[in-house]
Length: 381
Image (tube, rainbow, N blue to C red; front, side):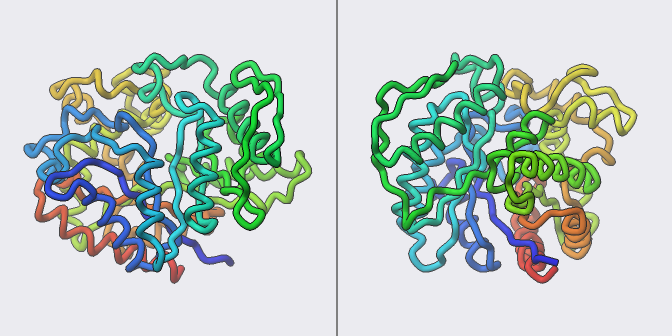
């Protein structure tokens, strides 16, 4: 059985003191735990109501005062490439948005980083979320159709060999378009797709180098979706095993159960549950506060939810739901959970440390050693 490789996520948020503190921290953890890659997110707004990101609720707010102060990911990755000569980490964006970024610009950014990093770029891409599109005047109609055309456009440009190309497309037509950046030693960045619904899973099977769901679901659900992807790959004439099985793993860990429970019951973690779908809530016998048909992360507009409402809604989230969405427990317990996912097909875990959500800054910082223990331990599974 193949070992599970790891990536470490830098939230890419502006911090007090050193503006790149989260980036330095994530890179240090990646380098010292033997991770394969360093990841940044592509967001303008976070997935939870930032109205609860206050020192009274989250210790991390004393260091990162604004939860929505995201750095532009390609700029941040360029900086990482310039300072990454010795650790040789692969660099990924997880995932960039096919809606508000024209695919020609995404193709250029990824190809540039791939050349400057010596072939170590991963282009994570997905249809995006309403929160990062609609508030900024970007059309949010038919995001999956737009995504399919964006991927086809990127591939067409990368394969054009610098010759002018024309291509009909409902969303991104090309007319004598030139893309002259060469590949790095014959390679382009790998395409890792954030896919969840049936149509997106089939697209991933046809085109993706790896599947990278942000919310992988239960181990059994993950296996079922992976089977859908590999069936689609086979139907497209691809080797099904060519699609690597990855996934974000949201980690809540500490040396004691008491601290774990304090993070689980924190206002921020509970508010995070609003990004889970109504279907996920219903499995735990509770109706989603935003309605019985709410789709979750893809459609949430967290910036419209005030503090009082976020706190009230968050209190409705069952702890069993939180434990389903996140990997929770002592390092040994979390490693057991990752091992179960490995047994259901996972081969690449992209790890997010949620320790900063603890109400006390010092306690949250101390959970970093437990997170590092998880990251190191995965390599031995």
